[in-house]
Length: 193
Image (cartoon, rainbow, N blue to C red; front, side):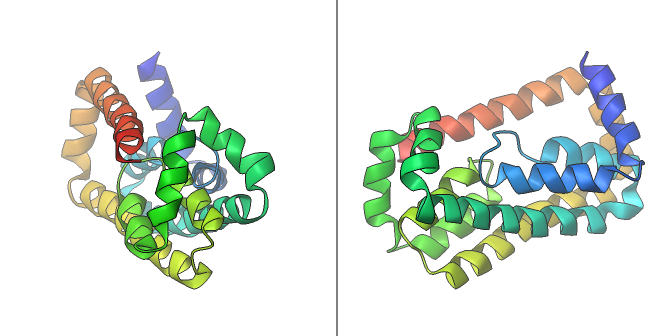
């Protein structure tokens, strides 16, 4: 099953619709969707290494735009939309403590969590709830999300064929490690908050 999904994603990476799907995933991941765009970005770059910088740029821009949707959810719709999302992830009490300290270090928090595998949507919503300066939020998001996606793109562009062989040979283990990191991100965020 994993091999079929991986092969499908590689084929998707060379189609004309790939960019739009990647952009949509990067956008919604920053506000509501739990799966990071790396799931598509990595195989798409491995499929067509020459597009690494374009794909990283698309992920960066659409992720930041999606982050502003999360910010709007926090600022305008927290009680109706944001609170259920936070509750879904089980961060209710911790989230309230977190918002009290948030604006003191908001730019650094956005920058740090924008690079890590932590659930970025929680940070975007928190930025809106606490009314972090939108310019500060935008700059911190652009820098951190750009770093995240361009580092991935640079590594895959430079080490493409060996990484592709490694991923294909150890696909099950790679997916397992990715899932562990994703779960660890949620757990660490819950402990941090």
